[in-house]
Length: 371
Image (cartoon, rainbow, N blue to C red; front, side, top):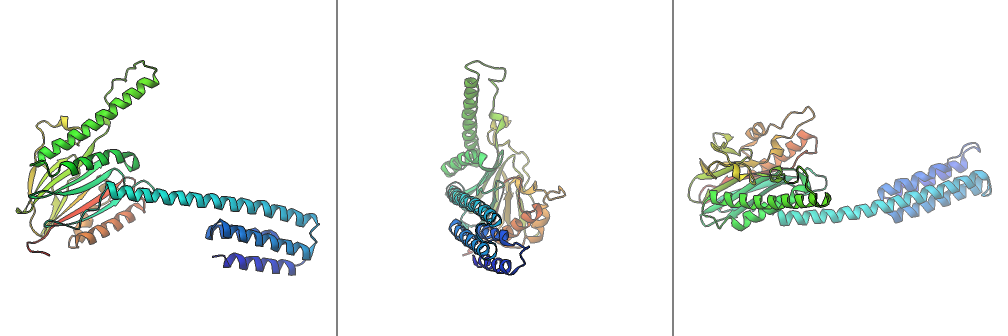
C-alpha cells in the first residue's frame, strides 16, 4: 500500500534535483505521507513521512545547501505538516477501533434482542429482513418474533413509536413479554391483553419517572403540567398471528399496524381487520377488548408482514415505495428470494438510506409432507 507514495518520493526528488534552479518541487513531498495516511496505518505514515523528510534534506544538500533560508523553511514546514498528518492518522485509527467495538456490541445486541427467525418452524417456512435507519445500528424500534405452541405457531411483528436506538427499550420489553407468554395463553386475545398490560405498565413507570425528574428540577414545586400523563406519548403498533398446524387458516389481531399482504396462487391482497385494535400501550381505548379474526391460509399461501418504514419510504421525488406493485411482480419467488429482491429494491428507491426502521417477514405454509 506504500508503493505509490514511495514512487512519488523518488520521482519528486529526481525531478527537483534535475530541474532548473528557479523550480522547486520539494514541497510536493508532503503528498507522500498524506496519501499513505489514507491507505495505511500511523506507523507506515510515520515511516513515509521520515523518508520524505530525508528526501527533502538530500534535495537541499544537492541544490542550495542545508543552511539556506529556503531549505530551512521547507524542512520546518515539512516537519510540522508531517507531525499533523501522523497525529490525525492516530486519532482516526483510534476512532476506527472504537467503531469496530460499537459494531460488535450492536451485533451482539441484535442476536440477543432480535433473534433470527428459524427458516422452518412447524409446517411454516419463514424469512425475515431488518433495516435500521440509524447509522451503524443493527437494531431499532421494529421487531419480530416467533414461538411454537402445542397447536401451532404464533408470530409477532411490531413497530415502536420512534426509530433507531432510542426505541430499543420498548422493543426489548415487548419481545421479552411475548417470548415468555406466547405459549402460556390459550387464545390470541388473552395474549394481546397480556402484552398490552406489559407495555402499559412500562409506560406508566416511565411517566412517573418523568414527573419525578420534573419535580426535582423545579425544586419540589409543582407546575401546571407536572401531573400530565406521558403514557400517550409512546405506543407500539403490532400484528399478532396464530397459525394452527392442522387448519388452513390464520388468526390475526391487528393493533394499529399496516395490514399484512397475503399471496395466493391466484393473486394477492391485504388482510384488513374488520375491527382493528388500538396500538399496544393504548389498550384502554379498545371498546370491547381484543378480538381475533380468521382468514384463509392454504398450503402454498404466503404472508408478508411489514412495518410502516417500508410503505412510507420515499424516493428523491417524495413518492412512497410501491410495495404491493413490487410484490405482485415477484410473488412467485421463494420467501428468501422475495425478501432479497424487496430489500435491494427498497434501498434503491430511497437512495441507500432509510428515514425509518423497516422490517419484513414472509411466512409460507408448506404443503403436507414437505421435507
